[in-house]
Length: 159
Image (tube, rainbow, N blue to C red):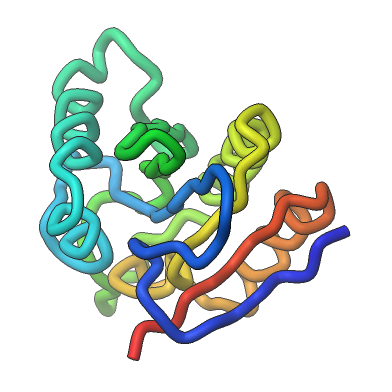
């Protein structure tokens, strides 16, 4: 079992040697342009381009809540676009867009990718920004899906 590590820093600049996967939560309406994805797009164009294509061609692929798309951005770095947010961009009086079951499914798929690539996983506090999720619900899912399978996982708190 690997302990979940927390550090201050930028998740788009993962602090580890070897293969790395940067994971984030996106929505199921194809929107990209607020939150952590802005930092991703500043570093690499591929994750946004592939996410938009994935959404555009959704009639013929697995795009939807709980789906994960892995996009290689460097020889040893991938970005995991994980669909874990329903529709709207941020919490409103009618509820929050986070879908915990979808995030849990994404995390298990992410674990399979990490094991296959022998990669560590790096992320902000997924699902807790614009999606409106509660960290106390998401952290145990991360531990069960990744840390309990001995996948080194780091959560970044941006200053």
